[in-house]
Image (cartoon, rainbow over all chains, first blue to last red; front, side):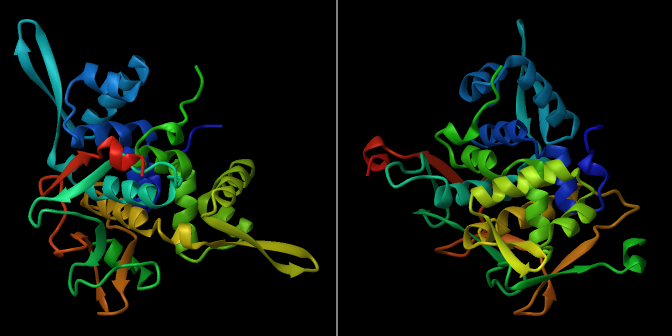
Length: 154
Length: 154
């Protein structure tokens, strides 16, 4: 059976998953947010096979979430930098981490990383807030509405 | 090569991806948040092969993010309901949708769904906000710190 192309679906969640949602791709982006830039460093940190890493980096560059930039000409060396499109994935990574902090650790081990908000200086947790009123957005406090076709066709 | 078990990694992002991060699993959760509860409805909406759907639903139930509940005894019928652990995935889905709304649509088509915040009544976008000061959390406004081993062993 042909592999499903999620990017063809009429849903933003599916399209995101089809574009950058493969598990290794998201872990590469996690590393990039943590400051990793070079192939060898991704490889060592992730323990990923080189051919898979190469494939996923290539895809992330093709999608425009990472940029491949030469930082040395002799020898020729490249590094991977997050683009603005890639930076917009930060809330996805933060939400994944937060769910894992809450649900994927047993009492005997604690999450390996804390997130400090530079502006207030405190160890933080993310709240998914409404851009208008600041109230928390939860499955119970929102409703999803299909857009009328007339709007979709704009 | 053996498939990598992301749940063994010392990182919450990886553990979340290993637990519920497979692409079909997240699309099933999206449907569940949109109110889908029955096997046939998931199957029709997702256009997914029945054996894959069955496998993923079973895994989501085993992980405790969905609960399989009998709603009819003659004939015997079951539906899938989101648990509190599953509800905590809402920010992940919302972040995925929002990235897709911004980056995965061309000018000629518009996202198929809008999110309305019931409390203020407006079409909303999510802001990832600091639980303490309410400021936005971005890759630039936070830093990730490894936890000292002494804290990790608590």
